[in-house]
Amino acid sequence: MKTLSLILLPSILIFSSCAPSTPQERILKNSTKFTNLPTEHQELVERGELARGMSADAVFLAWGSPSQRYQGLQGDIVTDRWDYFGSQPVVNNHFGINYGIDRGWGRRSSYSGFSFGPEIQYVPYREATVLFKNSKVDSWERMQ
Image (tube, rainbow, N blue to C red; front, side):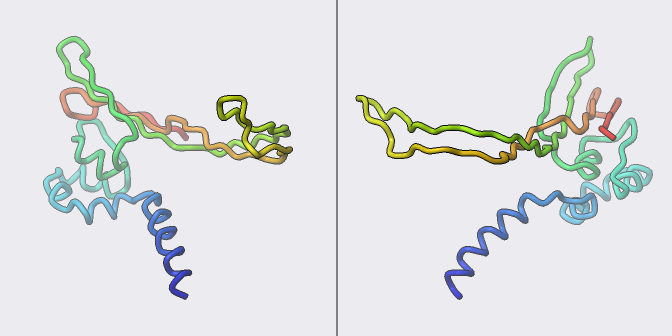
């Protein structure tokens, strides 16, 4: 029983850390940021929506942390772009012969054989983008 617990506990922790968080969870964890927002932005954040003029804190509470951030300059205006990525499974069928790997000095690995069947790869794609100008949301777009 102890061995089963030692195997299951890390698996549960890993999978739970990958679970997406909701605006309500982020609001609970960051209540001060939420209460400092204007009332109309609080209402949007609770629904996971954005509007022009929102702060970075409001966007974080509504959509979470971005996958990537880019900073730039447009004329005299400082810009910040937040990109959010998702991943999509792609199934490939393959058939192959594995001869082993050359380990140097003419030695080959002991593994050789055939492989076939479906292979699943997760391909990243851009799901949404938020553009900030002078630290406020100027525009956003999201895949439908």
